[in-house]
Image 1 (cartoon, rainbow, N blue to C red):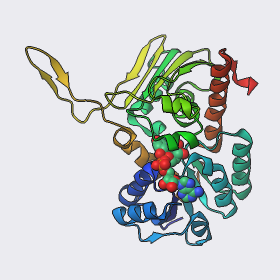
Image 2 (image 1 turned 120 degrees about the vertical axis):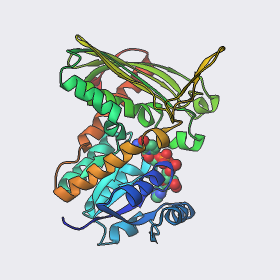
Image 3 (image 1 turned 120 degrees about the horizontal axis):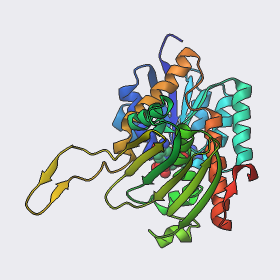
Length: 336
Ligand SMILES: NC(=O)c1ccc[n+]([C@@H]2O[C@H](COP(=O)([O-])OP(=O)(O)OC[C@H]3O[C@@H](n4cnc5c(N)ncnc54)[C@H](O)[C@@H]3O)[C@@H](O)[C@H]2O)c1
């Protein structure tokens, strides 16, 4: 494909606006033709802000436009699997936000539709495209830290999402930890067993909505390594994103990112600013790289770097984590 990839985007909420801005301003190989949202006022505001010329009345209208090559699905999680099937049947390449669905039969139906149509599908696990996480993976692969023994992921949001979002998110393990399950696989390969402890410590309304807001999950990997994921929906100091992999020859670790690198020292204290506040601040370069690599895979007819199978695997881990939490016991992935 020599000319630009023509893209339509559905879902102009938090992440849809990030991707709209990214495509309009930072992905020269793509042209954002139209956006849509069930809340058309949100789509219109997004189009006006980022200079998108068309607002489509609904997702089907994007699919009916023969000039559109690919769609970005950024709507709520409970729309993803249906939209993937519709887009595949319409012959569009697909970038879909995580997770594909909370339900494995729905995921399998979506992946089958993609296979049958022969279109590309990439899932938005953007943290794989973060320079720090990539450097840790490179250190592991290059043998810089020897054989990995332990992995720790700390992943805490600055504030919980609205309760309306919580209710359709599929729960903390599907919505939030799913990124960490993907990071665990990205760094150390397949997970075989999980044990989850969790609770509601941030906001009782999250518990009333049937979810949890705080968790520690231990993981066993097929290669023998063990790891932990530590999640909270509310770190009062900002977005807390740290990873360490410890091995026989050393460790690779990454810390939080800051708006500046200044330390203020005085007679009474040593201070610095807070970490970058949330994913829209911390991970912007990773969103740019993931969308660029998706568009490249369409242009060059190559396999996207995060496949449908990569989208399915962390959902299996999430299901095991939920079962573990409910039954208060370690759960092997083979049980799911
Ligand atoms: N990769 C990441 O870092 C990241 C970050 C945030 C969200 N996400 C994922 O992106 C998705 C959206 O999350 P968000 O935080 O942007 O949510 P949001 O609630 O801010 O936005 C979702 C938008 O989708 C629209 N929508 C819902 N159903 C629709 C339908 N049937 N047709 C058209 N539009 C519809 C809503 O009106 C809303 O504007 C979720 O699946 C979430 O897991 C990923």
